[in-house]
Image (cartoon, rainbow, N blue to C red; front, side, top):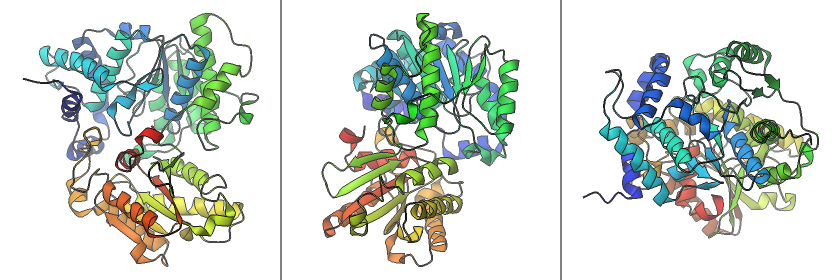
Length: 503
């Protein structure tokens, strides 16, 4: 007899993951399967008892982009909650750091295990019981992300939210979130050549994908973009009959606000969030907002939290250790990460003790990405930052120890349930192929870096143990930058026992 626990629900959910071979096949197809994505998602929605028009009642702010879509979503959520504390606001984002429940939030809080489990099985049972599909090619059960998206729709409907901030998973046009016929407003953050460029896509291709969230009669907002991307966004806004296409201008007074999220790049995200929130609240309340930056908006911007992005966490159990967490995993986001880390607010703080701290880099990236390029870009940005702030040393000396580890949670090769991934190729798990490539790249980029201080490790637990040993072995404080993968950051939060302070 099934006990129907949260742990069981997560196990069922993990069974819907695509393995590395399947993901590689989709990549190799050049994305040809995308044409089926929206019809299949609509079919799954119908099978759990909803029509797409039912989703209009969620009052959606739909957000995509290459950089900052998660942060912008977090800003919008916080601002709307501050402006309308009497409302119930749903936030759907991905991926999660430690628990899948983080993806679905009500008024800023992840669903409890009990609530997640209850609604999970309501969706799971309907899909299991109603197995008739319109096309024989449609899998009986949706993939992991599709299922969690369906679950979010169901939760927000059942809990009768007043507003839904909906972050796109990947792309936009063919994303599982893109079945809401009429959101209240749509927004696109900064565009660049991100990790989808491995398919040979141009910036115009990416802009076309992102612009797929524009809808007839719905305002479409974006930030200033590269000319070739802006041209496509304008064309698509006209073709899809958006009610207006707005390139948002800087909000007066915003630069003086101390945002809840660190990093200078967050001001562009916060600015777009302010404009999206204004459009949304004006539409929902029929009361135009004339003030440039209302007090409630400032409160919301200051209170915004988005774990794992340019986040500083003092270790609660090892006070000599400070963790600097940033799941940056594209060239653009790693550039922002190093701009933040190699600054007077972070690694260069307290100049008198700069040489008395041990600095550690824990890094990993997905198989297939260019570790050499990523590490080279990080070092180049660090060099630029060090010179800017009056440090004569080379960026290779910014870190005393570097650790390249697999995203496996525990030393025994196991994963925390919510962090289980089937997407790591078997060769990586067995031979740590990606991690050895990263170590080799680091040695090439920083040839005089001590070889004994370059670690290739099979798990996050192994990496945390190195940090713990450094903390225990001397008088120096330890600064640890964790970057390259949100999955890695989530694993560190879990293994190092940072959840209570980081999340």
